[in-house]
Image (cartoon, rainbow, N blue to C red):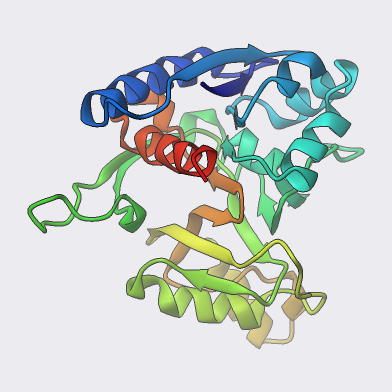
Length: 274
């Protein structure tokens, strides 16, 4: 039995649970020998201790941080992610929570779990009314069995964050189309990059055509502070992985497409079988 928790302090945890159950049923139909998957809501350290993997849903990241602190979950979550290194997926606010740094935070900042060596920019695309849905190519979903490329994913962006900076020199991409983005991020991020034991930051998806740093990059060439400029490249980073931690800027749980949930659960099952 593999137990997967969904942090149920605030935000879209029920939608994730629904998608996970559908994904588990799909995996079971394809692989009857796969281990049973059990899904629970996590609100206490005791519930977290039962989990082999965890999803941190979208919502409001500052509220999520405050409620986690009040629930005595911050340190257990950090141990879960960074010490025992169990598979963890954060969507939107969950991605912020799993980042080492965040910009555009509310006054006083907010507590983060960390795990991803990146700095994210909160509410990158603006207010709630500027939310959008777009088809996104996700190379990590791979090709179909007949060799054709997987269909684009209907990505829902609601006050979404993006990655501003990668805070390590160990950066890679899952797809050749993102190699230019990878290279430019590696040289454009702040000078305090370090090598570490977490492994390479893998860029899994970018959102083309909306990169807000282009004006800032142009300003930098005119003498602005280069370290204040987020990486200019093929697009905004909206999905990434580092070791056991996976993050997406968008909300897969708000669609009927369960491919990302299936993909992630297969990673969880694979680890459990090691």
